[in-house]
Length: 346
Image 1 (cartoon, rainbow, N blue to C red):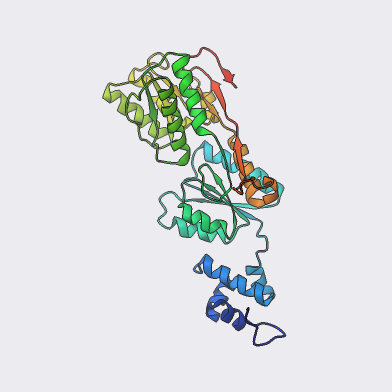
Image 2: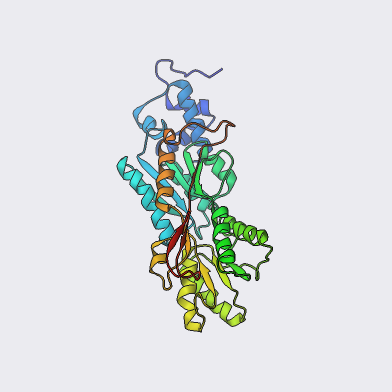
């Protein structure tokens, strides 16, 4: 049975501290939104307030889960066109609802988990890129704030993404079936992110379906243009250029496209190159980049809608699993694979 306050007319801060099993100083810290207070402690204090029906203005503002009109976005980094478009999509929803966006980049931050916890305490919802924080931390956050994953999955956490495995298998099959390539190699670190892991799996599945093996281990580089340039120089030095390079994203592919010709390798005559994402760079490249279009802006918008309003996601699935949003991709055929003119495969 819940303890009753010492003053039945009006509970005091001491009553809250006694009910929650914490000190008066801790309740005061929570009142002032001190980031040093853990999420668990804050939750215990809030539960004590609910049980004792304690709603003074100062503490109520800090702890009654009033809307903050803030959306948090957690990404591994803040550079590159993919993340820019993702934020653009989220912003389109946030602006319409009068919500401010706070973006946190976790790359190279030793305090990444603590930083995400602090962000969660000041937002109405969180969009988190898969792979940025551990699954157990995701589950913990999801108990206190709406969380939506972009890429990857975690038990009980809603997500919005595309089917990277199927899309990567489709673009790999195009290189094999349409252009007759037999020596294909993947460019990107397969364990770098859930997206890259799925794309590599699709690449391998397409090879296996056609009785082929990889023409070498994955070229394990980052997902930016400079990494693609480094990959090109390393391939040139190795003297073992494959028939085709299937890149984890457009930025890697652009780095290869910009560097290999200067080293004496013709694209696509000597090596075909494909990307993934269909960012603006793909259309501007020379030759123009064959890639997979995924609706990045819509990914961000869907994630923001889910993080800010559960109703936007509809009813939970029949088996009790978290609602999901799986968006369609499109194969975009341009010249870098060897095709003569641009086209779109459904």
